[in-house]
Image (cartoon, rainbow, N blue to C red; front, side):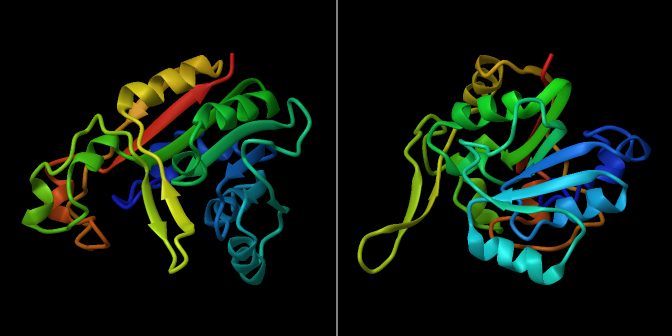
Length: 220
């Protein structure tokens, strides 16, 4: 699943036709509980699920799956050059690093020539609106061009959650400057069947403004 709208890889085929995933080496970045890797393994792929959070990988371990779990920084991947055919990330890793080019360059390094990277992030336009599912979430409340990170702190003032804002142009330049060719930018529409609300996600907002941006990149 690429985002809260409900666009799944079976429908989108952004990594390629499911029948062609068999035997492919795939790196999932910011894997969390490794839901995407579990689906990839079911298609016959050979995924590796990577996350910097040991706790997230503990969840993945409890759920189980026939693939490796790696606790590491996406900006310093512990893999040899040309180790993977594909890389993917659904709302993982890239929004949480101050310099996404470090991650993108590392991913390019570990991909084989012709390899594909597909990653999804919150659509940058959402940063200009309040994170509310109702009508109050439809009025612009901040500058789209303000790149100040969103930070949550604990009682000692330590950052416990940080998310970085990049404009659409920033994301495109990051991809190109890191040696990738951008072949598609997918903005999923909110489908009629999805009636759920979650956080700031809802049919109301999803029917009017995009919520997810999916970048499809190739290492030539």
